[in-house]
Length: 298
Ligand code: SF4
Image (cartoon, rainbow, N blue to C red):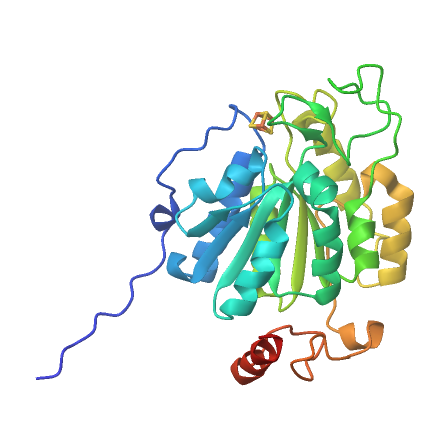
């Protein structure tokens, strides 16, 4: 007698609730990012056994412990390197990488650059709060000039990096900026990032309510509104986007995203690895090619 297999039940928020409750400070923006990721997975109906969340070190890098998916809490700044390996090893998994601005743009800046140019198929969500929160408030790569922190008590004297223009120049094929308090919009950005085939970068303003007294929820809100009202902005024009992104400095396009599928016209479609003729758009290695590549190395 044939055994009937019950159809899979729909993915629900409860399935994604981590076994450990977040230890973030009350009001931390990262709560909003966690909720948006969970909602995106529910709305896309991706079951948790098909998802891995990989992080580095920092407040936001505790993320994999707070969501019920596969997870790896790796070394400071090294999450993208581990995630690249994960993606190459199992093409079927949805690979999410989470972390902060210090972890991603400071310690892990080199991996950020190279993972973008390789266009590895993963979604990188940075909880950008312009400060090192876990170590109690030091200047980070995205701290604004003049911002007073524990490590720069007289004000930051260095110009911050602009992650959006860095990603545009670095060849990321999906770039977005969200705000942790704008749940609906952020969920949509994350869904689009997950669906995108290639490297998706989502920079999320996620206020550190304990150590960053400059860039608070109140500081961000009017800027989100201002940019929503800027009808002249055209997200389909990459050159203009880059220009605006640089010109706007800390007012770069919150709530916007850019996606491009014309990677081959921007980067020569050369083989990425000796293993075979891989299109730049897709770093997935066919199994036989991967085997011969490994054999050759041995
Ligand atoms: Fe969030 Fe800042 Fe507290 Fe860390 S220190 S959990 S970033 S509010």
